[in-house]
Length: 401
Image (cartoon, rainbow, N blue to C red; front, side, top):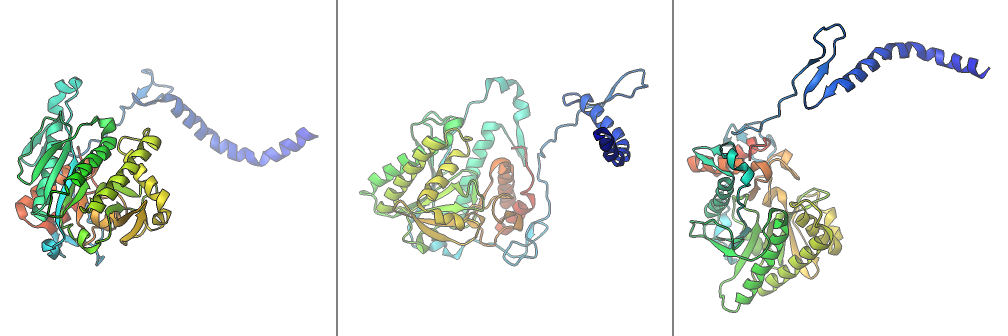
């Protein structure tokens, strides 16, 4: 009786099973005949030569030149408007370049690494050409550093650059506005972000001791070396005189604070508060995030420290407004990445175009070729706004850097 009842329930599904049977058979044959390293093999049953295998798909090669696409944000009044590579609404250098708020020094950590001996036979394949220049792996890193310095010379000509580096590094800088400061430590690739915080602390401790002999006020902006400063940043210290530090935020749940831009007021109290803040970030990094990716641990630690003292800040990171808050006695100014740390095309607001008040462009990851291309374009035109159109239209392409 039970068997008869089961058969009667299965009868309506028989047509559907008959229709699906060939498809199930084909998928199962395809599954067993797929070999990723060889491609896809199709076994025709009547073919005397046996299975016919298609070649594996070719790996996608990153472009080695600019690939222009549409400029995001067109039609929005608060975004850069472009006609080709010509800017409709010009972005110029700020009129506040002559502010009286103290000198600004940019500080970055940079070192070079010896080439892998296993790669010595492949040197020709590692050479990258940008414009009229060809670069090795070390050469392109140096080109990025030089471009970082030259952008600062254009936008903030009275500023200078200090490069914190491994005492064993073998490179030189030929700019009067830039100087190298060797600081002992472990600058290996896997430890570089941790060492960067330690180098910041050592540098600030030295500056704190030198305050007795220094008469002029000197503020500091700690940045990655793959940024282009395209507008004056001195106004930060003038408009917000009570803040000790400035951080940049974005609408990113896991890493809402970008460590590639940290401003420190050059007063005794500002430097002291910054030292204490960096020490707390360093401790959080060591205790909680040593197993994180070598490029993420510092940002995770930075967010953890801010959240532990100022959880209310996280509710504001999805917005675009400047705000302040206190973190362990330090007054922190929070600046939107969309203006002070704009990265094509990642992060908050990037898919909506380039804000008209953008001040820093951050060429993270494979965008470093675009940084060199942008400088070459500016060099040939002397038009900053048109160069920004080039960046905006090229930012979505992953280049060979």
